[in-house]
Image (cartoon, rainbow, N blue to C red; front, side, top):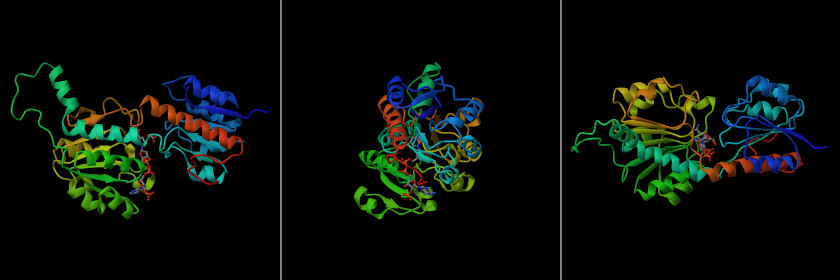
Length: 322
Ligand code: NAP
Ligand code: GLV
C-alpha cells in the first residue's frame, strides 16, 4: 500500500510528480499562503511523511497529533522551526537541505553588504523622488568594501563561501565560531577572533550561524556598542539573533553606520516596523537562497530525503538520529 505524505505548500509540478509516483500525496493548495495551523494539526494525524517550509512551526503540539509520522523533510537548511528533541524522542527523522543553497546565499549576503555600504537602495529612491539637484562632492557617500575588514560570525558552509567572495575584494577576513577551525585559517587566509575583538575590529559583520535559544539576541545593545561607527551589520541567518529594538536605536543615533537584513524576528515583518523607516537599512523578504535553480535543488533534495526514508533507506541529509 502506498504511504501518505502531506506537503504544507503548493510545490512545482515536477516535484509533486516525483513524489506522486511513490506516495499518496496530499498538499496545501496555496503557493504564497502558509497552511493554517488547524489544518496542519488535522492533516498530520494520519500521514507517514511531512514536507514543510520554515514558515511552519513543528512543535510538540503538532508532533503529539502525529500517529504514524516517520519523517519531517524541511525545505531549508535552518531547522529552528522544528522541535528536534521531541521529534527524535518520537523516532521521527528530520532532514534539511544543506549545501545546495550555499553559494546562492553567500551571493545574496555579499549583495546586501555592498548595497548597504554603497547606499544602493537609498540612492535609487533619492533619484526617483526627483530630489537630485546636482552632482555634489559628498552626496550619497558610503563605505569602501575593497580592502575593508569583514567579521564573520558562524564559519560554516555559507560563511566559508562568503570568504571566497570577500577575498576577491582583498578584504581582511576575521571570524568567530563556537569551535575554532584552524585548518581553515591557513587554507582561506582568515584570522580567528573572540566575539568582542571581532565586533571591535570589523567594518562589516555578517551573521551566518544557526538560530537556537542559546543565541537569542546574540547581537544586542552591548554588542552594538562595541562596533565601529562605520560598521555595517548584515544578517542573512535568522532574525532572532539580533535584538531589533537595540539595532534600531543604534542605527538611528549613528552608533553604527548601516544594516542589511534578509531576516526578521517576526516574518513577514510588519510594514510599520521601526527598522523599515530608516534610510540606512536595506531590507529583503528572506530571499537568501532564492534563485530558480537553487530553490528547485532544495525541493528535489527534500523530496529525495522523503523517498529514501519512506523506502527504509538512509536519509541523505539528516539532522537527527532517532
Ligand atoms: P552550517 O554549515 O551548519 O554553519 C553554521 C556555522 O555556525 C558552523 O560553523 C557552526 O559551528 C557555527 N555555529 C553554530 N552555533 C554557533 C554559536 N553558538 N556560536 C558561533 N558559531 C556557531 O550552516 P550553513 O549552511 O552555513 O547555514 C547557516 C545558517 O544560515 C542556517 O542555519 C540558516 O539559519 C541560515 N540561512 C539563511 C538563508 C536565507 O535565506 N537567508 C539561507 C540559507 C541559510 P560548528 O562547526 O561548531 O557546528
Ligand atoms: C533559509 O533560511 C534556510 O535556512 O534555508
